[in-house]
Length: 389
Image (cartoon, rainbow, N blue to C red; front, side):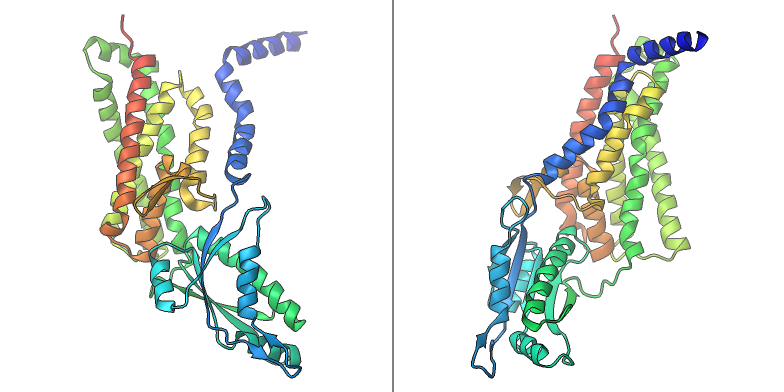
């Protein structure tokens, strides 16, 4: 009987704290909804540039074949699971022109089909001892778009060549990076993700620092002394930024001093990106504090922004939902999260050796988002915690 009494008490407490209950129950379905929004009816269309150098071949039976043209035809006709074209293929005759446009970001991948492509396939079909047919891929190997397009196109190429030769794995892919002399290990390319993972923890620490002021009654004394929300948030921002900088320093020390990792670009620029991201994440923490009454609520509710910020940072191959473009820069739904432009900029500097002129757009985007998040955070905090009759 006493267990039943305690059970009733627990149920009442759960119902009384309905927000924690709601977020605990909605967390899984919310992410399913997010994944559905990004993937359902939104399969990525990869931009592919192709130069077909294939001269074709006429075999002993006087049958003409041009496997390069056949590959381009298949790519043009390929559709994803939604029945939409999987590739936007542009045939470019001049290789230099194609490479220039690839470096400008107009294409996700560039395919160069060799002159002897068809001949090599026929030779393989007639003589199994012949070497595999070669196909050249060019692109930025650090991007998800290149990796995913290369994987799917290689599957199509394998199927085509195997059907013509009767041999499995008859196609040999040669990948060439458009970023010369930037040989990066998988570990080195993962460092920006580690830095951001530490920075996102500021969502919790900044929100907790603010709510603790409320739980301790400090807010009431500050209100009496006419301290504004802006002044309080500015002081907490400074303290949390210090924590963020220590986290960044420890991450880089571990990666570069202990494990001897390198950055291809200037480290001061990487630090600038990380610090701006810290400030933006602190602002997100203030928004979280505006919805929370105590530390326990922060630890529950904070999981949602934490995972969203990390999930859509670019660590995972989440497709971009483009909304509009500003010049040559596209703005997507993903970009409302500051970790997205921060990850992009950090990888451009550390993996590709880019400079300030190359990442200015991402830095401006982080600053704009920071301003918006701080405005929302100040409004919510004023409304919930700073009211004084």
